[in-house]
Length: 273
Image (tube, rainbow, N blue to C red; front, side, top):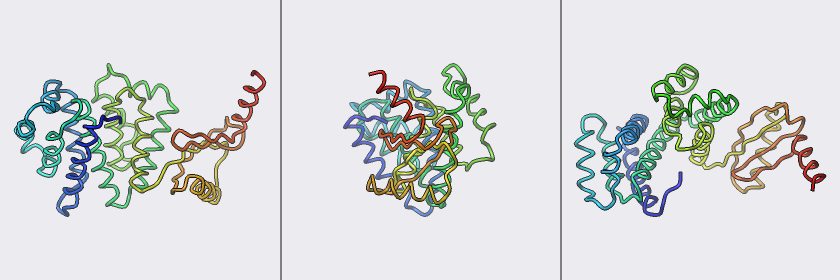
């Protein structure tokens, strides 16, 4: 998600209010997250409303009253409190406001997973679904099809993953499908994996291996990468026999290619130059 300076400031303020709301023991973070994402769906559909609440030149109190007039009694007071902070901010554009509310909803859901001590499993499930979608071009096309109805795409997700993943994972996946924002579904899911890892104060290493890695090999690789990058590293490993041997590691934009296929390709480039 790319935000301009004004929007980043507005999001920081709303995030502070979200943290305050979620610290209340009577607040259900998962419910707040789902409510915020339902507002994202509404703002995505209703262009006029999106422009009205995202207009930074208008009276912020008027924007708050408008949102409350539409949503009071339909979403909880904790969610409305967060929305007050969001729509009262000065965003660079209505689209960035929607992106910000989406980020708040995701954060609340990941907070819920963290409190329930299942953030690690949610992160792993998101990674596995991303790899399934990435490995099935027809599924990626179906989920990214702008002509298909949102309900049809959500039903497809539910038919594939219902009862197999945590409800928080399910909601997050459906939201990625609902708002692809010009990116692939798999990359949108990988963004969530990164967010979950960041919440655990870790970075993610995407490992593609030619053979299964033992637990000892995983621990040694994670330890080595932690030394290299100076921060804790979480491994997400995918098997790909076509690599021939070895493995390929991606951390952020950096790729370490130690596979046989990678070495062969490097040799081909040298011979062609």
